[in-house]
Length: 352
Ligand code: GDP
Image (tube, rainbow, N blue to C red; front, side, top):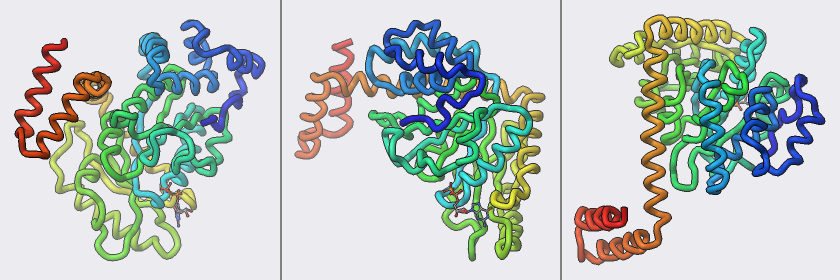
């Protein structure tokens, strides 16, 4: 997919960007990749992300070196996870909150994790009509990434994309996820602050919201607090606030709270941005910020290891064959699942 803001960065010489594009990716030296990223060239950044997402072995080789080079340049951002069910107002909210970030002279990257597709093209979150104002701003980079790679690794590459964006000088990163399935748990593991957007609902406010997702939230924003919904939004805020108090205290030392806002009328966004900054201030002061980032890095290392092992397993013909034979045997009650799995493990051991 072509990025909406390609070539818009005013500090980039468009001819240089074109020359860069014309060069075949594999012929680009590591220095050229790195310089392009460091210069904040969105064309290069975008291609680097494609490279990281690629499963081709040659690309993976370059990607590894590139990530290693970018790592020392990364880390200097605030990573904010934003989740909510479709229709709750996420893109409207991100447009509005994004303006506050930009008003502070900061560069913003928006990385939606798209559960609807394995590729970035033609997906809900990749829809070009979303976040139009941000997409047209040269200080904003928007890049959806697939929720799963072909082997079911969840959002792992989004984390690498965060690091690349940081190396490219983006100071605030929004990782957006639709509040369905597993992706929000993984997004929570790659951000500093986790924001849950809800809307006032008729009747039981807590209906349909997974307890687990609420427990992850550092802040709940009840959006659409405008017009006829204003009163219901205030009530919902109170209900959520009370519900948040029932969860155990967080290791961050932060007490999650709930606020109302109207993304459409631009109300309450400043308070939300202030709250996020308070959180960052608090957790940097009590050292949780650093500690958690380190824990997250280990978490993603382990996730990467597991998915790498999975691909080793499924790329191996002999093992694959054994697995399908054993599955058949399990279906025919010829072997128990546990014994069958042990047999595969032994096969792997013997092939190491
Ligand atoms: P997303 O699917 O979560 O990204 O939600 P959208 O941002 O696309 O918004 C879904 C719908 O809710 C759209 O029709 C928006 O105009 C509407 N919406 C978003 N924010 C607000 C708000 O603050 N107030 C009201 N009344 N409607 C809103």
